[in-house]
Image (cartoon, rainbow, N blue to C red; front, side, top):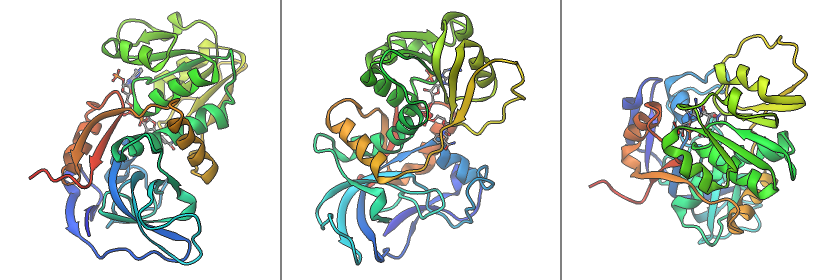
Length: 314
Ligand SMILES: NC(=O)c1ccc[n+]([C@@H]2O[C@H](COP(=O)([O-])OP(=O)(O)OC[C@H]3O[C@@H](n4cnc5c(N)ncnc54)[C@H](OP(=O)(O)O)[C@@H]3O)[C@@H](O)[C@H]2O)c1
């Protein structure tokens, strides 16, 4: 099979298109012909070697945290999936990833694809939807009437979080650049704060929950907009200063651990139309290095950059 691999940590040019042996599904595994994969910021950080303290990865490594495709084979003990099924899946950073024509995944990380979506759309929903679900539902427990501030609402996870909050009946405010204000409103935000125009600590008013997808300075300042007892949920590993401002707020990390229940919940929300796939652009697999340059330059916005594995740039 063809795959994108880096053989040492470094910049995007380390991503090379290579031939690799076809994987063979072991017991409890599913062999998937991959059609689409989303490029997530973590793929770039992993390739740079920035995440070795979190994920013990040793190159050579095929990146890729999720995908969508067609079942081509099943290992022993697998029930519920057959060759020809359309599925979407997640991959762990420590495993061989999905920037490849074929991937083997344990059955617990595979779920039937929403019928209304195509492969590119299904890939775009997977990791972003799972992260948003874990943060908003599993960690913050957002409920009807809650006031929720979602930072980076024009990003892939933020965009999913806005839709999820809207579906749950929360009052959602999103932060993004002014050029993306209409996009975030269209996702269901009641209010938008353009970070290049306004200071959210002044404009946001009191919130029950803040979702921090930016870290650093935004993290520390987010504490100031929470009501007493409110919750700051974060999933960015940037360091932030000592939290000794005396405020009565709960600060909780959203731990991103995929499981079959969350995968199924995300797919069901997508099937029902509550989670719309957000796709910024689509590139062929062989342009993975260019995809990483775009993501690292901060030029990706309004959703996932997706690699179409079956499309050639030739
Ligand atoms: N720790 C974990 O387990 C974990 C898991 C998943 C993701 N993450 C991290 O979570 C972060 C978000 O991921 P993602 O995939 O959603 O990223 P993304 O799609 O690349 O998000 C980028 C967005 O950030 C917005 N942004 C930049 N500066 C901003 C500011 N000052 N205020 C508001 N918005 C701002 C941009 O908005 P504009 O385009 O409008 O400028 C852009 O749309 C990443 O850093 C990722 O690595 C961590």
